[in-house]
Image (cartoon, rainbow, N blue to C red; front, side, top):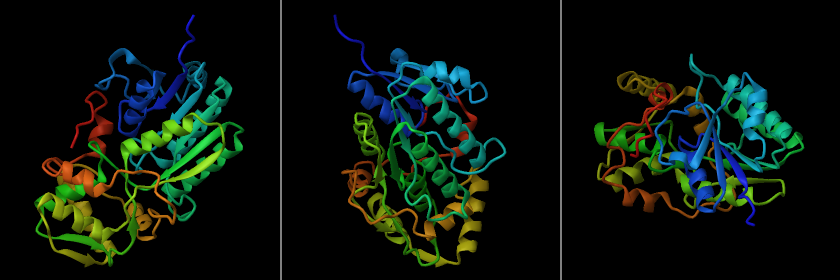
Length: 314
């Protein structure tokens, strides 16, 4: 008599990074559940994944959704404050999630954080990530904390929208001198790392960075060259460049970038001195997708307002 496959739960399996984690788990023969705000969102999994609503306001329901789960992969977060969501609420909800996972008997939590979460305590994004790391460490549940800087892949926002801007504007402005570093990791490399960490029980914190390090100026120049839209990259006072992104945001009906993201980027929070955890080079991936990268704008708000349409590949 064959034993039942282990049950793993992934937050946001119908979204971006959670989708890649779920794909890898299914390929390993695991039973997969997802916790999601978008149970009706189109997806490629069909009946292979059972979807449960987050139910943060009904923790007992969340406990039942996680009952029998061995590993929880948490990608839940929000990029910025908005009238529909906030960092503070995301922190509160994640603390609820950690607690119900403990109550449900989940053996291990693989949690996606951010590089240098304590480096910018004055920034709500990083302060929230740091608070959640400490809460998970203190929870008594076995954990792996993954700290990516920026993700890239077919459904990504930042890298795609840099390319989108380069395709449409005659110049590209950077905040200050653009010398601050960034270490993007391929989303499926992050998923591979997450699933590998789900198999262990040792408490670990991993800097989940890719094999290439760029200054922000180099990143923009490199993407422009790969997609055939090299532009002059000009230095602007950070506030002025930020207000330019606000204008672009008004044009596309989205939050193109936040001032907090600008501050975090310029503070060097998206780079660490550590060996790479991913193997896929952004330059190689971008060359493979040069014809489509940046053809369409990726809207963060559109994804959150439309809970039915599957994420579009860039």
